[in-house]
Image (tube, rainbow, N blue to C red; front, side, top):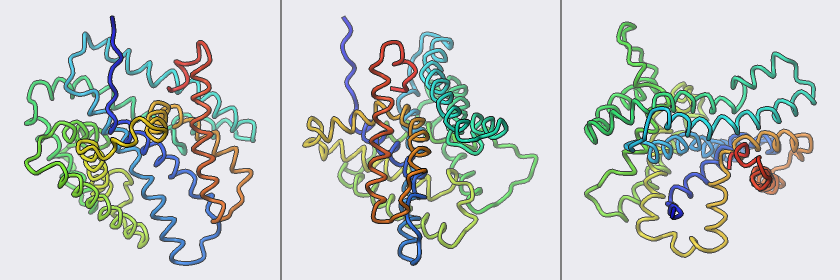
Length: 331
């Protein structure tokens, strides 16, 4: 008899935060006119908090998928691709239908489908990640922590070079180590690394790194620095991901979430986590719809944001309860 797999709360917390962060990135235009420096910095801070969503999603994927034994390559690919492809097909039909209804032409619809300009780019990133994951999984299983340090050292060095816009000579091709693939490796490493300092200090250090790197990210954004032209591949965003991941992971280890795990707050966090992939697509529809009713008010923005998050959760949640549609809901 199968037993229900126990959920890891800090993964749920991170995933719930990540989907809210993604929504943050796409709703800040609901702010009213930004007329003061304080308002501009506040909007930038809000938006840049949202940038952490995608790295956290990828880090969780690596923590859950890597260093596991799969029956076969076919089993792995089938399981992962069904999980992401079926919901994508379902939601992209709804998204494109909504855009076509409001006058989108065929060229624009195609760009939405391939992720340019559209949040659907993340789906195509996931495809690339999952295609490479069996190779990375074997690499990690064979060489363990040594493999992780090897890969992450080269990946982080490339992140530094990209941050400062330093070009290596063209014949030295390190593209296999570049890009988004470093985040799953990083997530697995942080989830399994045994640190020598105590858990409470790591928790505090994680949140400290998060705040400092966020401040740097906002400042670089404010001055228009080229250091953050590559939004998800620069030092501040990587450090933000590390800081948040460790902060939440070790806050859970020292039982900071014990009081909320079984109440309404904890159940809400788990539900957001479970619905997060569906929310990634549904919030596009919700945000587009509400954009026609945008009050353009800083005072109304919190209410609009909460409404968007709620409706983005409600859509996939309801669809997941309809027979034969659960597979397509992203829940």
